[in-house]
Amino acid sequence: MKRVALPAGGNRALRNLDLNLLLTFEALWLERTVTAAGRRLGLSQPATSAALARLREMVGDRLFVRGKRGLEPTERCVELAQPLTKLLVDLRSVLALRPFDPSTTTRQLRIGAVDAAIAVWIPRVIARFLSEAPHARLQVVAIDPARASDALDEGTIDLALSPFPSPSTTVRSRALYPVELVPTVRPGHPLLKTRGASLEAFPRVHVTFEGLRDSVRAQILLGSYLAVPPVLAQTDAWATLPSPYADSLAQRGVVAIVPMSPKKRSHKFTMQLLWADAQDASPASRWLRGLIADVTRPG
Image 1 (cartoon, rainbow, N blue to C red):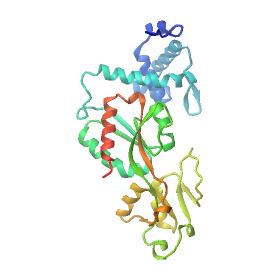
Image 2: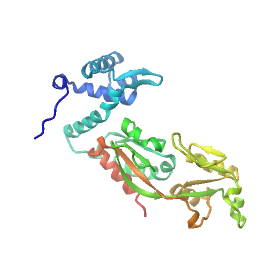
Image 3: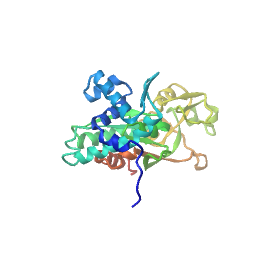
Image 4: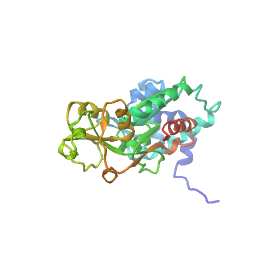
């Protein structure tokens, strides 16, 4: 068997390891302020500061330094975050007195998704969640889909719905359903009444997210799909929307989908379910992933 060399001082650090310090690291990583981390841990601010001091001594690094937005992680801190998060997940699973049971758990789980996916799928997810996990808590947040992997690595969400596959080796993915961007206008739009009318004759509204390289030329740029229908209702503009969201709106008469020839249709992509590798074996994560996959299954 090949021997693995431990870094200098590694055995001494293990002998001095206090698991409470790992919980302190986790709280500081998630909250980025000593006060909020202490609140999460049920500790006073001085006690949390003292724990941070012990962490720094144990690791030999400052770990968190003051920044404009609170505590900023050092390079060493970022290196430690993923393996320590996985370690805590594994420890919680091993030490659990009973297997994960959604019907009795009181855990809080967090899903991040682009707002169009929230509008279409999250109500159905919530209905199943309330039925199967009546004592648990679910937090749903709108995210920039391009930063989904970062949010998972940072531990601010447990799962993500994003049209972008994970570029990270620490984030896993599962394909859910196909999505096509389809052109939409308000019901009664002149485009629907005039034979031979072209989309290019009308102003375009386009949804874009910070951090995405987007070459689409549009007169109006929005940062939310949910903002599109009210804009279309008041103008002769048009916009492309993800097909599940566009279909839902069209069924309620909120928008009309502009018929397009197959040659002019936009490229299809696939909605992805993403989760951190550290959460892969977590029973709670596996249950919620299965629930989402079942609810979003085509047909």
